[in-house]
Length: 123
Image (cartoon, rainbow, N blue to C red; front, top):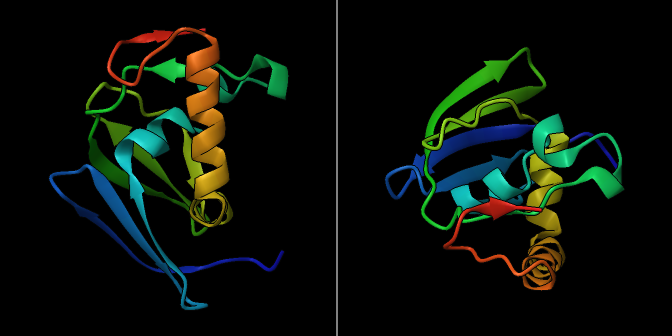
């Protein structure tokens, strides 16, 4: 996959949506909930796919800060104080491009683990 470069990042809906537009013309509206539960942080992602945590209870989370990391990424801070994930441009693009599949897999994981988008918990 070719490197993706954003031309615009904008928070909307009181931090509930991150709008990302890329130079190739693709644009995505990524919910704060989606970004939070798909955080690339070791805390959530782990070091292998088997270590990935399914985080519930983030339906109403919001993004409070976007901090550039060099020229390749941003660090997002959420109102639940999570701020350790570094979202590369390629990862943001992948989250947008594969949203339907990734979101359905997340919802299935919640259900399989008895978790809810509204009730905190991780397994």
